[in-house]
Length: 291
Image 1 (tube, rainbow, N blue to C red):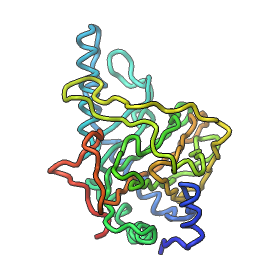
Image 2 (image 1 turned 45 degrees about the vertical axis):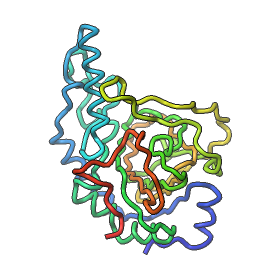
Image 3 (image 1 turned 180 degrees about the horizontal axis):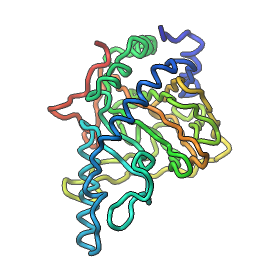
């Protein structure tokens, strides 16, 4: 089972993140990658990506389409692309499977393979050993980090996007489905940066406005030398406190860095901010982790 021992719990509490190597087997990683290949082979590319826009008005419509597509993705399996992968006519400039940045945000609920991993005995045991009473799954993402141009992820705190009252109730579980090394864009953390609250929040803007979200506050300039690289092998799980500052660099190597990540919230005594971009829906209330 995947229970944490006291020294691991202490390290997580001190650093705000913890690496658990060998959490998944190669076979378990392979099954998720195969499933994603099937999903990508059948994907419907969203219209706002495929349409040629020439006038300003059309450009505004595209931006609105993009906004709506993102804001309503919390209970769906949707596709988000790297910059510059479509030409002006909306055709792919690179093979479609190499164009995707991520798939979000409900694989954990809508796909049986990902549901099984998310609610596995191992994950449940891990959550119990962290003392979670009523954890619910709020979102999931499959991240591709494509070779040669997989985009960087700027320093951020997950709770900026998934805000709760009180803070400290959101936990990320990040599973490496391929080796994540320095050269292909591993995670970097500032150890101990999870204790000072959040510096900015992304909130929904009034319905119908573009871009649909805005930021309150701003991300401070952080000393780059504080970041510690965290390379891990395929099958590792990284626990990520909702307020720990982390980032990843652009992937300029010739191999991808695929990962499956999902977020849990301790629902007992917690308010999920009604201003968060992501909201539970009647079709998909946040599912309890414990089955």
